[in-house]
Length: 163
Image (cartoon, rainbow, N blue to C red; front, side, top):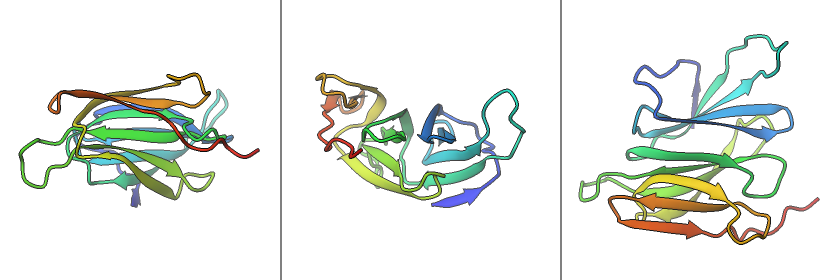
C-alpha cells in the first residue's frame, strides 16, 4: 500500500464514490484503463462551502491483472462502505490472475485497509454489481466473466453488524 498525490498520467478506467465514515467521502479508481492498480482518494471535502484541498491517493493494490470492475457499498452493514474490485487477467498468459476481492477500511479516515479475496482465478471479471438478492438486508455481489464464460452470485453471509 502506498500514498502519493500525483494523478495518474495514463488515465482512469473505472471510478466510484462512497463513504467510509460519517465524515469521509472517498473515490475509488482502477488505474490506468484496464490497469493493475486499485486506488482510493481520501480526505475529499464535500458541500458547497468546501475548500479545495488535495486528496490523499492510496494504492490499495498493484496486483490486478486488467482491472475492469468496481463497486462501492455497505457489504458489512456498518456505517461505512467497502470497495469491491474485479479483474479479468489474460487467460493462458503466464503470471496473469483473475479474481474478485473486497477492500475494507480499518479506520474512519481510510488510511489502512484489509483485502479479502472473494474469488481467485475462477472469475475473469468484466463487470460486477451490488444488490440485495435474497432480501436479507445485505448487499450481495453479482459478477460476470467474458473470458471464463460465467456469471456468479456471491451471497453475503457475513454476520449482522453489532450496534
